[in-house]
Image (tube, rainbow, N blue to C red; front, side, top):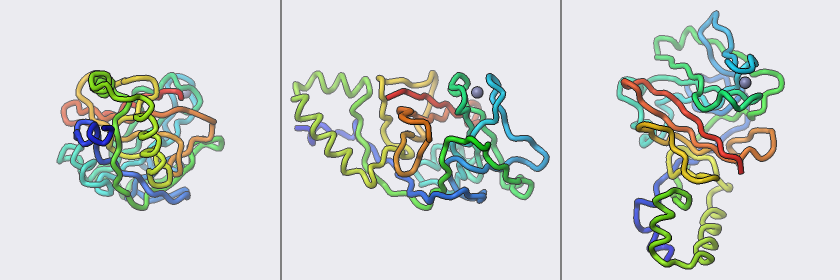
Length: 235
Ligand SMILES: [Zn+2]
């Protein structure tokens, strides 16, 4: 019964689990979490507009290094670019609309790396490859509607979901694309957005401040310009 439910492709989708090396990479042409980040020579590290502290790199995205499915979410004119996406780990106030920078290949020679702040909380890790995995929707509004209309046994369903999640490689909870996993019900930014990543503490992503819940990183295109939006939900 549960398998029949998930044979409906509306409720499952391939995600890309990053296999990571824990190191503070200073490589422009990679995707990574945390650690040192590139800025244009002569530029300062970005600071939080609310608390004034230095922002931390959440994600560096070198678009050509993304799996094709995720790369194709970017406008064609942006597919050789590098993006750095920052957030404040001191106050969570400013974090919905993330500070980000876009660099084209013409900028790459002018980029220099800046060290993260001393008390940084995001562990730095470089993505070495992606593993495809099926991700399942068991949290969205349309899931709840479909589930309640099919008289399925809740206990059987939960047991099955637990098994599915336990079978994810290395307990993957952080993946690019795939289905959003909401902790507190569906929350999608206004306007047309695509899901870039689900982020939660696992073997790829680690934020050293206890149980921070989970987050979805969305991308909205405004006149073909990517804008990044993060929605944290505490666990
Ligand atoms: Zn702040």
